[in-house]
Amino acid sequence: MNYAKHAEDARRAGVQVPDTQVWFNKQVSCINGPFDPVHMPRVSDKLDYEAELGVAIGRRCRHVSAKDARSVIAGYMVCNDISVRDWQKRSATMTLGKSFNTTGPTGPWLVTGSIHTLTMSPHPPVTPVTPVPPCCTCTRATRPTAGPRSSPRSTPSSWSASTPRPTR
Image (cartoon, rainbow, N blue to C red; front, side):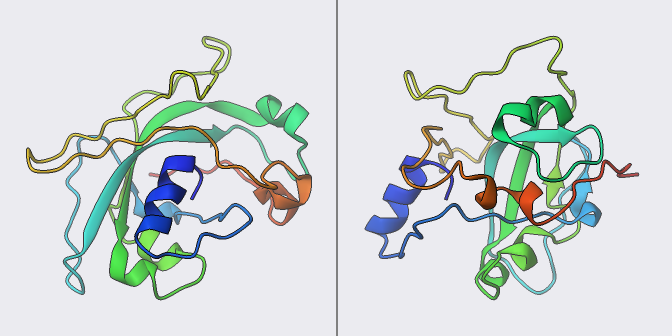
């Protein structure tokens, strides 16, 4: 729950929101192209999706400070974060439900940091929109939640090296 609105919605639904940021990964095997089909898994019909900002890591890195984070970023892209919700709840890390084949469409463009300076600000909130059937809305404000979210010990680079890899 990276955003205040997301945490607020979860609290209203009776979900206990953790004090620290929840990190999860999507396995490389789930990545597919922006126009490729997303396959409904045989083991579930509980798909959900959200537009997300993807960050492509450009070089192997570990223990990267917030101050130096942009130096390892190759660029940014639009991602459709598709989750298999019932499988996501089977694991404390959510990885199972985030990593089914074809549940990670990205692109079609990678915008490098040298072209744009990306700033996400709560005023006004940025609301990514996922193309959805007319009966649904999938927008989220991107104001970060309060709490101990910026400690170097709470970032993925403190417990795992990031290594760029080709996806195809």
